[in-house]
Structure formats: C-alpha cells, structure tokens
Length: 272
Image 1 (cartoon, helix red, strand yellow):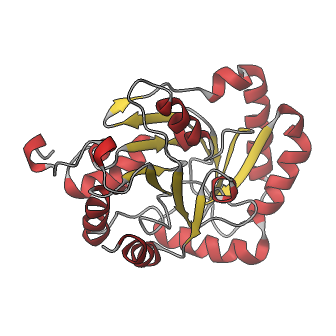
Image 2 (tube, helix red, strand yellow):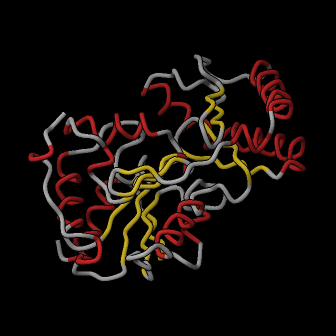
Image 3 (cartoon, rainbow, N blue to C red):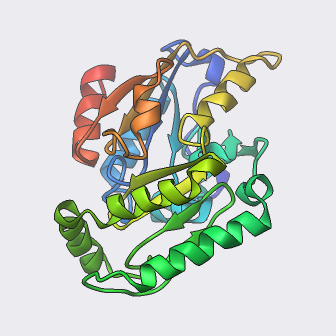
C-alpha cells in the first residue's frame, strides 16, 4: 500500500471550488470496463476532478471487488481515492475513509424467506439451458444477493459471450419475470446489471439508497447540502441497475457507454 504522504491532498469538502456539488459514478462500464481494472488515465482525471468537487462511487458489488478494480492498481485503499464510497448501493458506505451506518439484507428478509428464495433460484438455474455453467450462481452480500445464470466464476471471455447471447435470448429478463411473480409480495426489486447477473434487494435499496447518506450528512454540524448531484452510469435503461438513480429528481443523470465516454464528458463539464 502507498503511504499517506504519497496520496495527493485535496481541499476540505467545504472548500472545493464548485460549491454544493458532488459527482457520483457507477463502477463497471462507467469507470472501468466490466469487472476489469481502472486505467491510470481515468484515475488521474478523477484526482483532478476531486480538486474541484466532491466525488464518490456507487456500485452494486461489495467493497473488496471495488478495492480490486479501483484501489489495487495504485496499491492504495479505494476509500482514499473518493470522498464517498457507496458499496452495495450504499448499504456499506464510507466518508473520507470513515464508515457510515450500514444495513443488512438478511436482517430485513429473514432466514426462512431467504432459504425459500435460494431454493427456487437453484432449481430454476439447474433446469436452464445456457451455453456454459460455471460456479457461484448466488453470491450473498451484505445488502443484496447477486444471481448469475452461468455463475460468477465464468472467465472474462465467457462473460462477454453470455452478454451477447443474453441480448437475444433474454435469459436474465425471463428469470427476473419469474422471480417477480413468485416473490413480488416480499417487496423485492430485481435489477439487471453488468454482463452476467442481476441483483435482488429490498425495494428502495437500489442506488438511490446512497442519497440518504448524503441527506443525513447535510444535517450534521458543519455538514454540506449537495444541491447538485451528478450521476454517471451505463445501465440507465428501465430494468438496469443505474436506472433509479439516473431518473431520480435529486440527481442530474449522465448516461455513458464506457470509461472513455465518461472521461470525455468530465473534461467538457469541468474544464479538466
């Protein structure tokens, strides 16, 4: 890990030149190619942006995956690269490296209903005819479960191939529809994101959940009310896991096609 002295210093949040403004980013497909590492170029641009405004990421994955993609390339904690880190849509959250209050999916749904959901999903996947099946079909996270018809152990090549296959076959779309029919009464949201999977979480625990943290921070002594919240994401279509926060009236949404697109927009918007 880099020493603290090697990490650039930034103005205190209240002294950033662009006042009451924060820029939030999805991770996969926005800051990085899906499940791959961030580039040195975008890290440099984020560092320059952070001199002007508050910045944060909001991702569906857990913190170790975001550390791997965003922090490990520089060998620094990912929590040192952003003012706000919202893992699992903000169910696990940090401000300036310090943890904020968290929440838990299992506490919310209860063990019996969770086991019923898992049984249904595993039976469904067992009967699926898809090009490949690997491993880790259900990944349990703090704030949600992630379900993949081919398994999260698929290689990058297999992920790309399934993503193309799924655009025509609609495997995830059909599976989500079946789950909504069976478990809709529990108040769950099913959100397709990334290349091979979809997330299941309590309704309201989508990426807009992170905005609650910003609102709560504004109420604290010396807190900042972020009246301008930019959000950059790639899965902004209906059913995509960026849709709710992209459409939320509290944010200004920017739909991008990848990291290069994100960098282009940032340079234009903030004169970087």
